[in-house]
Image 1 (cartoon, rainbow, N blue to C red):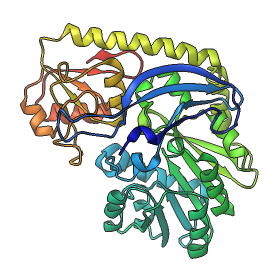
Image 2 (tube, rainbow, N blue to C red):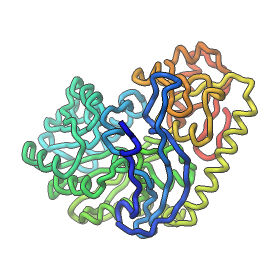
Image 3 (cartoon, rainbow, N blue to C red):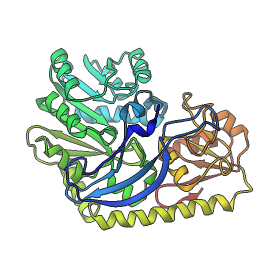
Image 4 (cartoon, rainbow, N blue to C red):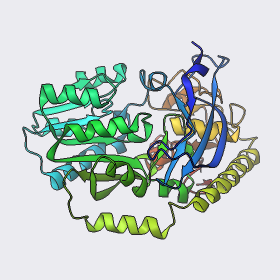
Length: 411
């Protein structure tokens, strides 16, 4: 397959249609973040990874779109592998109950439901009509085995009509960390608007653009993430379909996400949403100059990373967490198996493979710790506390390198 035929470049904003896009940063030629290799020397296809900003919609977005069939038909991130994620699934459930108050026979739908981790609390609390929709057949099989009714499909407006015909309208539809992945954004939001009951509530979790900007989370920029939403830009998108944000919560996912609640009917904005909008305005998140400054800081971050690695090049450094986001970071900085000997990852689907571009072997926890490292580079830094605790409990006494948030540092 000629993968280069499966990439296209945008000529206008993904949500406003404006052709006045401002170039922000180019992170170079990068392999697809989840395209792990079976062999270290396997050939790879790399694609340009660059960002632009639309002043009309306030949306930061990738210039490149890779065919979703290549990115998502077989997926290797499994929600249930992280203790933080599992804990948050229960927190999220309680928030939905408090804010929306769905009844036991209401339809609850999750878009991109993965292994069903976030639908499981509803199931465990006797909600009888739950439905997941996810395109990755390998992950859907895991969800179904756990009793979570799941369709192996991409969400769109036609699937929405199918769901209405078979199950009726939904009281709750939630989409966690997925809307930024979507190339057909308008069709996906139309599907949500169509499926929601008149008194229903939609919920979207998104990695906060303000936090990406302030804390330099450029490692979250990869081909699967087409859009980097602020409250303002997501509101712009929702308003196009007469959907009205009324509340916001914080999430620990991705090192700092926001969860926005919206409805067809206009509801009074909560204090939490008003405060979040005020903060975004005060920080000038939706400002072209702020994103241009972000690009300069990213270049300095790369220099600091290489300074640290070169300073300890005679020491044994291993990584922890072969996340998709770590691939952007490693490849942009030019870090490879000469800097980091192996990367620990607790996901069995990744063990025994090699990272894309940087060609670093991925091993299980025991193999990594047995190699007696001097430093553990916490690439999955958004799970830092969990990782440090696991390593210390195993007897590891060395130091940790933490790349984000902000400038890299050692603990």
